[in-house]
Image: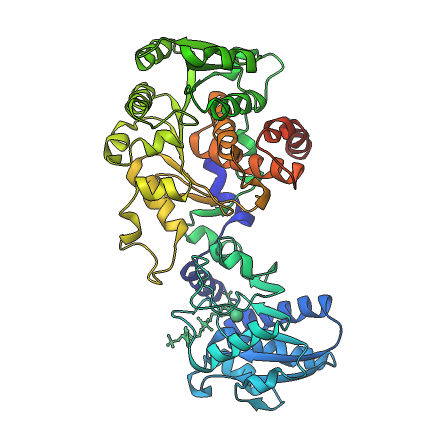
Length: 514
Ligand SMILES: NC(=O)C1=CN([C@@H]2O[C@H](COP(=O)(O)OP(=O)(O)OC[C@H]3O[C@@H](n4cnc5c(N)ncnc54)[C@H](OP(=O)(O)O)[C@@H]3O)[C@@H](O)[C@H]2O)[C@H](O)CC1
Ligand SMILES: [K+]
């Protein structure tokens, strides 16, 4: 993914990075006045495209977000709309640019009052944007509470007021917007919940910031897209054969056999050349009858870990998955730990999910110390909290004391040395080197049993075919979301691998056409 930093469109900027981009734009000769005028115009254009003439109330805050609002008010008025403007702040404290557009507004400037919401059909939320530093209070709080209660349509400038653009956290209740117009690039807060769920339709407007400013910023966060990794996607070669596509090895427990079967099948579906599922002799027949393309190896009773190590002596097993259905009860937990450590000591590509993570809840450092090769961990929030109990108290966590999923995932990747896939509706994929990708295509239908087992299998299959752990995790999470969309409502985990061929066909047409 060396070329990744050139993937401009998918880059995400934090509030401070956005501020640096603004400054670089000014140095590059684009005055803030032009940026603010362009920002306001982008909002007005987006509104004019979506709403017919109506009575609009523009709520302007004390900073440049408010400045954008002054521009919007003047443009909507010029388009023949009945526009009222309320301003909360002092003109003296406005930036020169905002003050200029304040004075350009010829209409009345009113005080914030919820009475203004009577006869209002649409509100432009230009109260707070990138400069939000604390929860809303006073008149802004009252106004937002009234907006929530009356469900008046809102177009938010940059972000709905109350959302931290860098983390997606909400500082107090936020009025959901129908439309949010942001500038230059999306921010993480547009893609991370709860922020993501409050933006409505998101429009990214080009306001004239030269894309070269991105080179000056050491940006490390992207929205997931095949653009980031399709060049390294392991398409089968015409002259190749199944051994070129790796040999994945999955450990299966004796009780919940479905989980590891889903993982194994998913690894097959995404293209692993061979897949072996190693199962305790007691459950061997269950696996053997259920699986056809997947080979099933027997692990002798009470020496499963040793037999698993035997299998690992065959270096053709180049990618290993442990966790789904591995077992945690009594002896199983000790066995699961042994098997995880046996996999890691080989230094080969490993996916650790579910029980493989929880088995180390009491001593995560033992697990982290054993990670010395390509490794992907796929915790959900519960497993994450067990493995990384102290992370939420790290100084790096965003000072809003609200959830900062992006930083948590990054810290966990750095601490463990593994690529961490922190799962959720807004899955974050973080690499130990600091890079992070936020996934944005997953439908709610994916929240179903077995979905994680399938994801582990997709990652495993791509690792078996030689993808790097960060690429494999990003590609697998994206594919997982796409098959979720393909199947839609009524989705069960078994559907996911079976619908992957359709998703791969579309992906291939789009990204592999010569
Ligand atoms: N990025 C771009 O290319 C452009 C962005 N524009 C717009 O500029 C805003 C960011 O403007 P900024 O002035 O930095 O910040 P805000 O307008 O969001 O906030 C204004 C000030 O409000 C104070 N503040 C913060 N939180 C609260 C709160 N909860 N209650 C009351 N007041 C609050 C804070 O000042 P303090 O001194 O009080 O801390 C903020 O400075 C961006 O979002 C875009 O919309 C440019 O216009 C165009 C280019
Ligand atoms: K806003």
